[in-house]
Structures are given as structure tokens and as C-alpha cells.
Image (cartoon, rainbow over all chains, first blue to last red; front, top):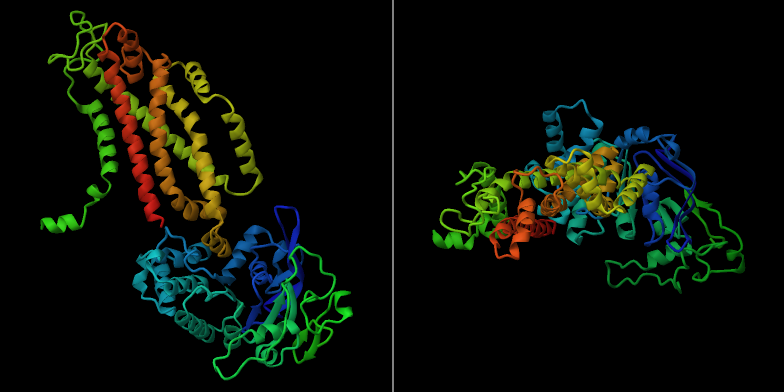
Length: 314
Length: 277
């Protein structure tokens, strides 16, 4: 049984002018225990909305969101709150995700207060010390306020808070994209180390292909709220089959300046997010387009072991 | 030694206005309770009627022979605690209500619509009716202050709280399974405490003018009891005949106290603004 199982999930948002934006459009996906699954796509592709759906912070319009075999979409609030002990999240903006009026110690301790009421104060403090040490922070920072720390340190506090209850799933919502490049590498290394030590399952949301390549086992490529391609990360990145994935990969810069990435021509802008798209969402931008593309939704089909793509030309 | 003191301004020097305001308000309050008065504020002297300020009567005497200085000081004992207490109770009721209305549910809508209907009444008139109906005692003025000030706290806290609710750290708290009460009191409340303090001093200043206005109108006062509003009212008729001191000194006392409370509000606003950066 996969740890997370989304079936035919739809989620739209109503805009003030009355039109609807389809943020997530008929998405089915799974996250396997012990693996790191990456969600990749440009901004507006619905990847953060998917993260919130998995966390139960947003209800889907239709479809099921299962966590450990339980559909969380219809769960009563008290049960959902109890279940949250097994769900961790690290947000993109480390500073904004920490309450400026609480000390670092109080921030990291909070999940324990909520979900481990039997612990004494001293036991909680010991667990907080240990959690801070695990993310390479001096336990003495517990008395400080987040404002007095660097971005990298703040993100370590966020990670300590997400992991203190040893959750079965950790959603990482672009956890490194607001950090400096050097700090980014350290934080990724920390995520890797914690994963190896505790056997963590990550749902890693990113727009950065290089990070995904380095960090994930499975990759799911999203475009306009739909899954366009998915499979084992090395396979998908080595042999991308969907034109959108190919375009995404060709936009990547190589570390070797003599190697120019394969050029893949993609023209135009993405369509309006409120527009109804009967067929493939890439219609109008795709160099491989044929008249069939705009007629009906394109289902995912297998092109390799665990490798699926939603393109009739692939 | 002195250069060190200059390079590192102390807490008093940095927030001079705040400390000045606090000193004046608490000075008036303490004087009202503990300052030995030269004359009994509720015993008139028939041989000293309408005497101008002199060494014997610093602020003069009024048309009944009361010593104005003694009564101005004694009035602080009643007027200030009424105003401060009323503002404090209004905050204690208004802040939790305001926090509760940031939850997007039916009850919060109900509270807000109720507040709209309530605030559609002229509040001072409502206050007068309230005090009169509850026995015309000065203590009931506290009730009037609460009625006037509570809706202001509710609206302010709701406005601030709704903005803060959109913060990532609130979403993080929801994601970890914090209860609504925990989100309100652990996460929202500390982030609005600054504006609560500011509004508290504004409310106290406003409440003081309400106390004065009500007693000026003769609401809630029982005569020999000194109150600034009653004294201003009593002296108003005498202004035209040249006996300016009867109204002027209680007027100055109200002015001083209101200014000090506003000074405290301004300074707190600056301090909390600075610390939230």
C-alpha cells in the first residue's frame, strides 16, 4: 500500500471576478514509503496546491486523498488533527513560517505539546535539544527568537519542528528556493542525512531540476495542474518523453560550459489558467503538435518500467 | 563614564514621552489617593466663597466655598480609576471576541452583524440611558465606557487578526494540528498585543472624556463628590462673570491626563512598530 494515494483529484479556486482557476485537474499519484517523490513544474502548475491537498490543509473538490490507507478528505476535524502528528511540513519561506513572538525552543516544542501531552516539561526540553542537535544547531539557540537568526538557521528550526514527532511523511514545499546557493547545498545535505538516518518519506516540491535530480527517487512533472510525465528520476531525466519535460530539461544550465544543452523550441505563453482546455494543455506551444492533440484529454500511458507520459506523440 | 552613558542611551531617555506620560497619569492617580489635601474636598467653607487663586487657596474657591485645588486632586481618585478600569474591562471583553471573529464561521458573522446593529445607536445616548436606568451612580459610568469601547477593540483585533491569519506560521500551526483555541491564543494574541496596548491607552483617554462629559451632564454624579466634569460644569456659568478659575483648573486636569494617555499611545505605537520590523 502506498503511503499517499491520490485518485482523480480536482481542485479549483474561485477568483473575485467569478471565474474559476483549475489548480489541480484530475491528478492521480502515489508516494511510496521510504522514497523521495519530487513534484516539479513552473509556478502556477499546481504543485503547492497538491502539497496542501496531501497535508489535508485544503479539501479537494472531488477525488480521494488517502494517507496510510485512510481517505483524509472526509475526516472529522479532531481525527484529522490527531493524524497531523504523522505529517510534517517544511515551507519555502523559513522566516514567515516561524511565529516571531515565540522563541526557537517554543516553536520546536509545540508539536510535542499538542500531540504528546504525557511528556513532562523536562522530557520535552530534552527532545527539543536533541531535535536541534539533529539539524546541526546549538541547543542554546532555544532561547533566541527567529529574527535573530540567518535564513539557513531559520530553515533548520523549521526542519527540527517538522521532524520532532518522527512523521511518516514530510512535505518539503520548495524548502531551499529562498536560500543562498551555499546554504541550499547544506540544507539539502541535511535532508539527505535525516532521510538515511530515519528512513523518511519525502514529498519534495520544487521547480529546480538540478535539485530534483540530486535528491529524488521518483519524479512527477506537472503542467497546468495535470501530470504530464512521471517515473523513476534517472529514467525520466535521461529519456524525457513529453515535449514539456524536454523543454524543462533544455532550459537547464550545464555545469560544463562547453556542453550546450539540446535546444528544444517551445513558443508562446501558457494559456490563461481560467480557460477550458479540452485536450492537451500544451496545445499552441508544442512543436510536435498534431490536430488530434486538441480534441480529447490525453491519458497517461506507459513508455517504460514505471515511466508514464501523457502525450500521443510519445 | 559619562561618554559611555551618552553613547548608550538608557531606556528612559529613548522613550522619554512614554515615561513622561506614565509619570503624569500615575502621579495624578497617586496624588488623588495619597496627597494630603489642604482642605476637605467635600466640606465647603461659607466664609470663603469665589475667592481667586491665592496662597491660602491655590486654585481659588467656587461659589459654594469648596477649595478647587483639593477637589481637582480628589477627583483623580474617582475619575481616573473609572476611565482606566472601564478601558481595561472593554479590552478584556473585546480582545477575545475580536480574536474569535477571525475564525471564518457562522458565529463570527453573527457577532459582527450584531456589532453593526449595536454601533448604529448613538453610543453616548445609549450610555446616558444605561447609567440612568441602572440607578444613576457614578460607578455605572464604567458600564457606559465598556459599552462604548468594547466594539472598537473587537473591530481592531479582527482587522489585525485577519491579516495575521494569512501568515505562513499560522498555516504551519494548522499543519501540525494545533486547535483553533491554540492558534488564537498562542499564535495570534502575542502578535496583536502591541496594538492592544496602543488601543488601551487611546480607550482610556477617550473614557476619561466620557466620564467628564457624563458628569458634566449631571449623569451618575451625586453632588458633593468631586469629579472633573461636575466641576467644569459648575464653573461654566461663572466664566462670564470673571471667575475663570473654577472651570479652568479641572479642565486643565482633564487635558493633562488625556494628553498623557495619548502620548503613551503614540510612544507605544512607535515602539511596537519598531520591534515588529
